[in-house]
Amino acid sequence: MPQALVLEEKGKLSLREINLNMPFGPHDVRIAIHTVGVCGSDVHYYTHGKIGPFVVKEPMVLGHEASGTIIEVGSAVSNLKKGDRVCMEPGIPDPNSLATKLGIYNVDPKVRFWATPPIHGCLTPEVVHPAKFTYQLPNHVTFGEGAMVEPFAIGMQAAYRAKIKPGDVALVQGAGPIGMMVALAALAGGCSKVIITDFAEPKLDLIGQYDAIIPINLSENNANKRIDHETKGWGCDLVFECSGSQRAIIQSPLFVCPGGAIILVGMPVEPAPVDIVSLQAKEVRIETVFRYANVYDRAINLIATGKVDLKPLISETFAFKDSIAAFDRAVEQRPTDIKLQIVF
Ligand code: ZN
Picture (cartoon, rainbow, N blue to C red):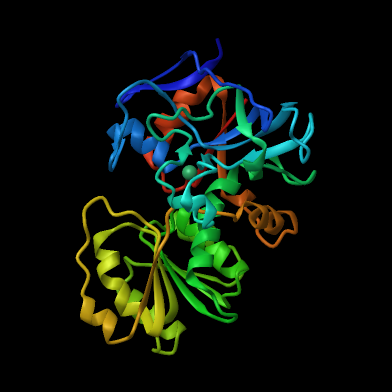
């Protein structure tokens, strides 16, 4: 039986053998896992035992941001071969569902998503995955970057949903890993500049090193004025809400320009009240984002051409045997940590 990082129950992790029962079909590939990113959702299951309606009732293997090497291909697989370096989309939709037919498989109620109860994740040495949702990495793209494609895909989805026009000015609220991914995807998607706000200076310093990203610390008393100044008082074409904080959600209509859009990416724990009239008075378009669909190839293209560099966001790597330490470090939420990764 393989070893895996198992969430036994809320607050209790163990590295142990577990029977994963992974049938191998003609359209599947077997992958030796190389790198797995520690995601906020994994950490949330660890600390809270649930996310919304998804409750951990039985031991579950964590991890969904993965890259690795193909070690076996199914008889019907033609696009991949043994030895290919790949990354994987963690959500496997039902091929027969209406959502899949419509191209919106991210909102398929029947999707099987790694490390979302009751589906096991990929923090284990080998996984079986559909070839259709396994993507080859160009030679110069590292396994670390490969494991960053998953969180970057959320940024890509946000950029799609925003319907960016060349030259748009964007505001990203929240400089966590997802806020950073959204900021980089918004630039890649055509924004002329991206203002990003947070309270954590180390995060703002890091993302502020990228060209055309303007970090603003909300604890400064002239923060709102500075945002205003960046748009000559008109407001931002796009406001990407990535903090999930009630206060930020309520404030977002203030920063969007007339005719602009607010894209809700962060997930507030409690329902957030919104002033509808403040949205109507500007005819604000509202978009929501849940995971992603059909963005992996384009995400990899952007990384491969150097248009998007995710390497500075990888803060530290841990060996698989130190997975529990990696998770306990993630729980600390150090302001200098963006993405922690586990390497096999
Ligand atoms: Zn993730």
